[in-house]
Length: 192
Image (cartoon, rainbow, N blue to C red; front, side, top):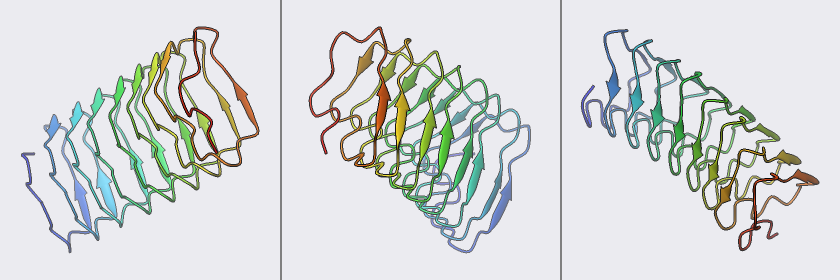
């Protein structure tokens, strides 16, 4: 599905992407405000940048097992997404993927994920728990910043690098278990 294929199709309510499709291009469903149901085929390996940006009708997303990369801003500003289920092949959660998904509740990041990009879950302020898989080595700057409902966090021993302000503004954070592999706590990591 090419870039901008359904860009600004504001009345589109549902779409079923067949198994023959392997790529969802950049901004493919950009600002499809009423899009409430998306079924991704089992062959989709890549979700492009801002593919579902500002799709306010989406309440849940299931990422199929074939998906390896979720590009930057793929679900940016999807304010009503409550649940995301990741397939077991995702290795990269890009920058700002779920930024301002303010209704997102709980996240389980599978063991296949190696990189969580900067601002990936920025301002997901309904999220109360995150389980980070044991393969994650890098968590980008401000990845969980503003997640003010988050109460506890376990940073697995696989994590060797974290950016600045990762948990900035997580005002209800009460307990943190820090990776044995980290040699330093970055600037502003737990500010506010």
